[in-house]
Amino acid sequence: QVQLVESGGGLVQPGGSLRLSCAASGSILSFNVVGWYRQAPGKQRELVASIFSGGVTNYADSVKGRFTISRDDAQNTVYLQMNSLAPEDTAVYYCNARKYSPPLSYWGQGTQVTVSS
Image 1 (cartoon, rainbow, N blue to C red):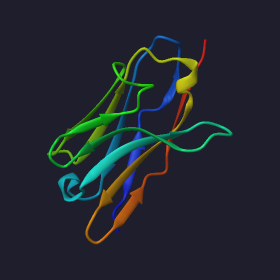
Image 2: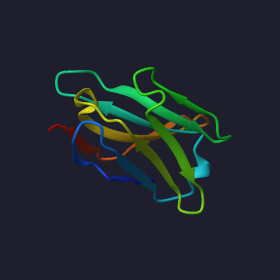
Image 3: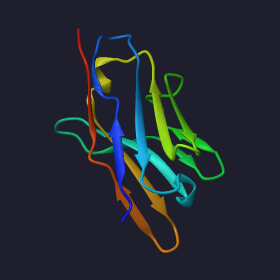
């Protein structure tokens, strides 16, 4: 059973930065895509950023230019560097790893990010 463990969340002031980590129990390269999602109170979970096994990355329009997703294959970890944080970035952030064949999807437990002065 694959386990994903997120860390790095916390309370930060507007304009600040945080780096989230998603550590996998197995090889991160075994997944076709790893993504960071977030869910704010009363809202649906949304995709923030994703990185494919070949290294291609995608971002939601709301975080482009502020967030960067990256991967450390040796550490089996995917990171989300978040800069210029704003109150609307407040949410629980989840890591998701997916395989296409067979179709499998794994979620982490989530880490809270709160942006407030």
